[in-house]
Length: 178
Image 1 (tube, one colour):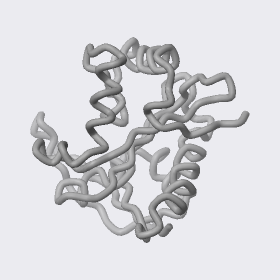
Image 2 (image 1 turned 180 degrees about the vertical axis):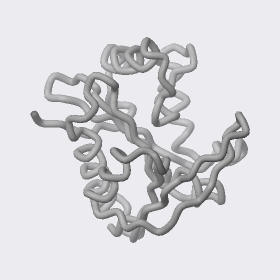
Image 3 (image 1 turned 60 degrees about the vertical axis):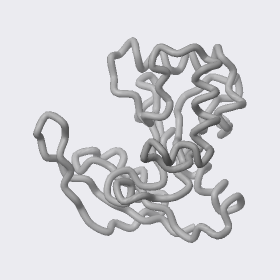
């Protein structure tokens, strides 16, 4: 199957609604977080994604970022990937430059690896001053660790993260050279 990485403003409303509904119907935490709709209309979500690409997000403690979707030849969205154009202190430890997720019905088919490869290839052209990117994953997420490693991720270390429930988790940090 052939996949294409498209920017948020290229996805159709029907493709997005089909994609996000699967996450919501499964009661899953939407990954990447930027792909969520929070009960908003498609137009409102598109405006939020556009705003996310600007410096206006800094006032809320975020950094400019761009959301992409991985789509099939039939324009079915199978995954989303979020590129943060820079790192703040939080992202340097937990989150990194890139976060991605694959809809439940398409997992364990190598789609995350394809999506990450396409994103890295795009960054090599579109962001020539960016020499490397940071990716992180939960320590127990072996699938994501393998995806990162298979795309050239070099393990740096593990850091702890406090969850809101008081639980401590470990996060793996990887760098990928562009």
